[in-house]
Length: 164
Ligand SMILES: [Zn+2]
Ligand SMILES: [Zn+2]
Image (cartoon, rainbow, N blue to C red; front, top):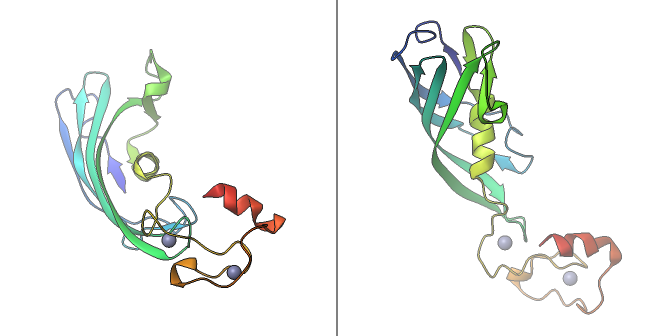
């Protein structure tokens, strides 16, 4: 989603509406998270003196695997974010809190993706008491006991166990 900033840049008080569906690359938000229909982005960019203030609402549905049993889950995300945009070459007191852009066109994709990543959970579970997969044979333990001895764990699966 490309924004043409020419009408708002150096035009104090001017506003630019942002509204549309932003398609996201398959792995944009992580290999196991898929926004097949992209996200909707609605907001505005407002010129405030030397900077542009970007504020937007983001909504979208995605598919993610349960962190324990890998079953595909449908989840939704919905949040607001704000960013301060500064044109390259302007004096900036705190570089870490602003986004520097060059030229008249701003691609919102990277900004929206980094805010999606901030708003995603560390992990998603099909249910709080998901039993996960058998560390030995890989069977889904939610569907019943696979019959494996669960006492000692194959060292190859040790990492997965700690990952829970
Ligand atoms: Zn699960
Ligand atoms: Zn098993």
